[in-house]
Length: 625
Image 1: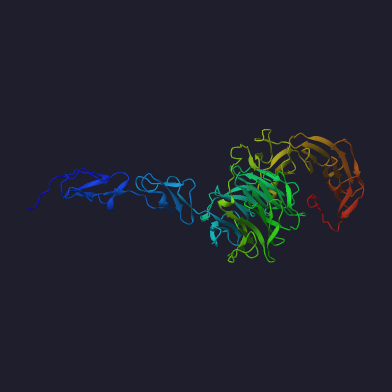
Image 2 (image 1 turned 135 degrees about the horizontal axis):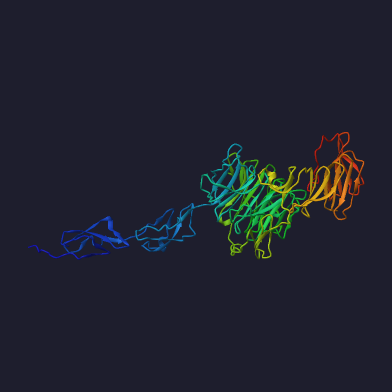
């Protein structure tokens, strides 16, 4: 005889609870839900009361675990149970890096990994940046996304649109800020590509950083510690620095301009606070200074022809440089010792280079290649150099390892009003052009006594100044400092910031910062030229109709005849350092004549057979021409 079992299953289930009215009798199915941290087995939604008064399944709820994988990575299962509220370390798949802002993932109550503000695994944003001249395309920025130790693949990813086809000759980056800077010779400007990524493609927004460079081989170098950009300019014969902290593009400073013939190559080491550059000219050399331009000295001054590019290796404290004239890739210590030729190729067109770990990446203008050399012995690391019939003009390593962060960033809270540069013992402030540092060494004031770099000109009724960089064809607004009618000639005394102005019969003097005119002399003759001798502080002028060159002394106030009986003299010019005076005479055609400053040794320099109606004369003290 069968025994009839009566009774009910219990109200509770393991790690869950019933959610609907249920009689709990044998054979009845009841809906349930799992407690937080658990999920239904096999996605079931009901349990059934069995003959033995137990629920089936016996354990309808199991542990809720977050998955092993995350986007582009995996959690470290050995260090994490993946249950809710647990925090787990993770690794990223090849091509991605862990986000330094989120070192662990957290399992949420719904069984998914939290994804707060940023992804855990970031795209592997490292590699080489190449600029190229194609001759027919504006697509001339390339990247090589790679670990740099392996054979690279060239990706054609940048489309730059400017008013003219760009000719990018130099580049550098700030990896931490994800910004890359390019110098375009055609538009004579430096641009910034913000939010740069090796893997991005298409068009990016380019922002001008500095307008009005020359169109020569300007070389860039970025200080990623103080966030300044440095560049050389062979035409202007200076080295500049500009702050990148703000979007104020007026925060630039002429760092070095004395005793420079043709500054070209440029590199820096913000950790050691050193700036390196080459100066190509009569006495070509490689020099070094602090990042503020102080403590300048020569490293190499012999056996150089055209050192066009320099790269600094922070780990070994060595410089690597390309000498186009010698067709070499060479290396030397930061102190200028242990110079070695790594690569010498008779048919090379080595142009730019970059260094990373054991490798040198060198562009070649002649072979349209990017060469890979071992930095110790110069051996070619890869035979399959990149080739696609473009002329590679610059190469930059975009990688955190080449931009290490110092223990202390002195400029972070230093408070410089304009530009902060890092020194070995701290920080120092520089002022933008036209300003001087105050006694507090932090703030800057307008320098009314400093003769700013510019051009001064007359339009007949006004005397105006304009930024010297206008010679690059960039437009700058003029500043008219003096109103005077009938101006024919004008000459400057830059030491005392005064202008001498001549019309047909009178000569005036005025301070640059004061519009008041002081009449120096009234002449009966027709004034045809004006010149200033800053050495003896004498003013000279020619009179075309009387045949006289006059001289007046600023010190003694005496005016006297310097030379007479000349044939229609005009356009007088003083070479102060050479102690010579020149002028044009119109005698049976035009002649260029000269004498010493005492009036002796009068001679014809160029006769009428060599001249055809010259309009004026000028002198280049650098080229002595």
